[in-house]
Length: 167
Image (cartoon, rainbow, N blue to C red; front, side, top):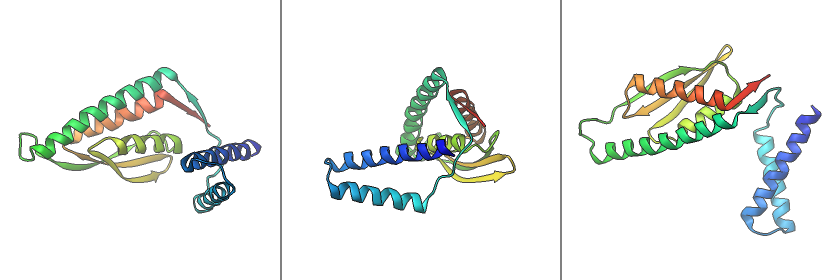
């Protein structure tokens, strides 16, 4: 519990520093408004202590980042082609698939949803917890069902290779 409180103070301090950086100057008004904003956000969306530990694997992170850049470039081109040639050989089809994750660890689920969300043509439309597993509903544009399933499955594998989460 003591570590969690310490981590919260560190997080709040970083948020306050970011807030002051956005305003561009340190003043009493900026510090007070920053503390008020952070307190409001913490009250509305409190975080709970976690017992998970995250071990970062640098090679896995590099592979994850490199593949993410590749996915961003190729999916951007795919979406651009679909918008420029809407009735071309690859018509804009839309579908939603469910992906059952190996577990429901909040860090992995959040990382997956963020990476899917920033990739053009894909979006997480729902997250559901089924027992010990999380199920993501992923919307895809201009992609076949099998390809979308494979893309999401390989993304989860890359995230798990980059970040080892233990309880």
